[in-house]
Length: 72
Length: 261
Image (cartoon, rainbow over all chains, first blue to last red; front, side, top):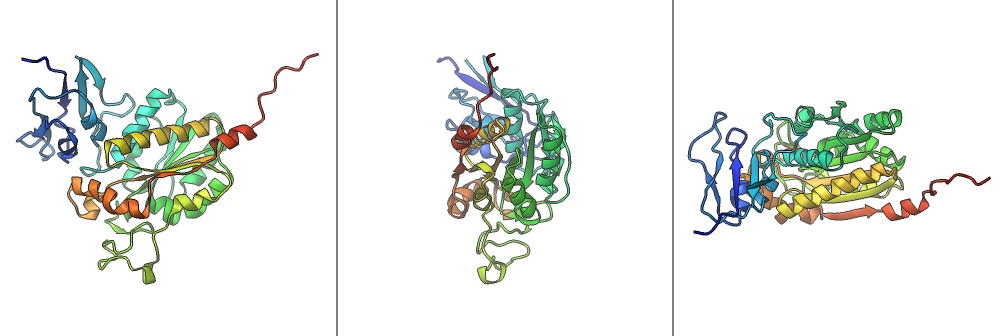
């Protein structure tokens, strides 16, 4: 198994489920969480398919600043 | 693994009240990132407008003075003249800067006030429910132009940045978008340069940012982001509209050295 290059953490309570990060993720590593958060939005969740490189495009486009990116 | 991107230090840990997919919160975040990068947090004084971004002071951890409708440039002028060392920026929407505050903005630019304006253009009055703004595009449907804006009745979309660029006091004017990763990076660069122009005491700087408003455009979030690229940039082409930074720097007399006896 190859070493994972990156991962992200999405704060589910800050996320408003706009889906912009899902659209811009080049590796399809983000998908809807499947359950609603306290505000009633369907947040995005990290879909760990091993392809995430930590490019931080999701964090750049996130309108809620709810994504933390780790790389290394 | 090393953390490479996190919530900026000066963005307060509260929920934004903006709709999902709104461009305001992205610009807030960029200002916070710049405050940290340029180490200007203690010097920044912001002037939020009436409109959706009226609660900007709840999110950005710097000083703020709320202004009345459209009067951002006038309030900023007063603050800048009273505290020349402060970094004063107005944060204005299109209903604020291009409708009720056109006079203040153009005259502040003409006087060459050392302030920065961040102009969020989403082509509608957002907070009040999506009415037609001066920046609304031809044939665009809003609650007060249900059949589309007609040029014979409502006139043409106003291009404030180009108008301000005609004044001699304006030094740096750029139009950017926040609907793509590249656009967001360019926006950050533009705001950084605008702040730098002010720190160098060169004159008025303005960054117009085309921002999505999914709620009032009645679109899905991602469709509104695409709509900017497909339709809005035809009327408001992004790019540097005016940049006389180098000329202004040449004009400035060099610092006088100590006179030799």
